[in-house]
Length: 333
Image 1 (cartoon, helix red, strand yellow):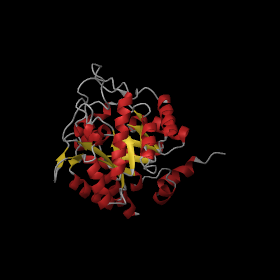
Image 2: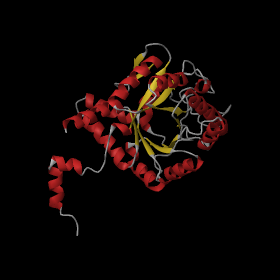
Image 3: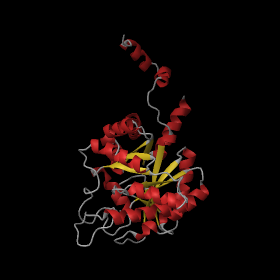
Image 4: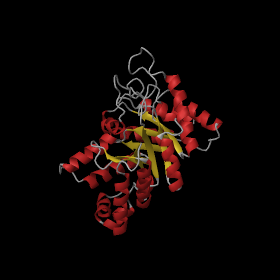
């Protein structure tokens, strides 16, 4: 016998019971705030395409994490914007690079905050591709094996600086296995890998590419990022990354791929991260600024949907705001 519809409606209409039977929990503990790092002192440079988000120098990133921790956000994901770029992205694995120095500063100031680092070359290469481009090759034809070596070198430099987790976002073949092997060899076997396993060639990355100055100078990234039409492939990629040693698998972007998050969660049983990306953030900000939507309600609904789909971890530029909104709701109860 099915549960009477009238009783379900009574539960929904009674606020205390509605909260008790809520199926999906969203708390500050699920949130990760991305941070863009840049060289200099006392720098807070607004990002036009991402209202409310700034490029931060190391000292300002420490101040930002102080605010995040006070709001209840327990984790950050660091992206570096180097002072100079070249064809091999050498500042990505420089021991004195902006990410490496920021990790040391953040772990000294806030040892309780989980510091994750993005491992990719796109912010560091002069051509904007996520790896090394072969001489004379098409702009998007990346040398997979050489790139994987440099990614592993980057991950080691982050781990040695004190990163709590490394997050390869490049989508090169075999990079998780190589990074896992190198971390273990260098004495960092306890550093987990948060793998961008299903990273789609998405139109929603535009604001990020402005923020990180990482748009490809020619060509595109469809040779190594995933076709938005494919879902079975996402499951295969996640399973392969887990076999190679990933500890968490990620789907990026999140909202256009809620079905993929659900499938990856169901078919792997592994911890899953959903990345609520820059374009998703900026769309909500722009619509709210125009008075077309309620920013808070729309952002919280979006984040709840990602959790409902199966994401254990939510990487979002709304993390600090969302944590504050959650705290306000809890205080009213």
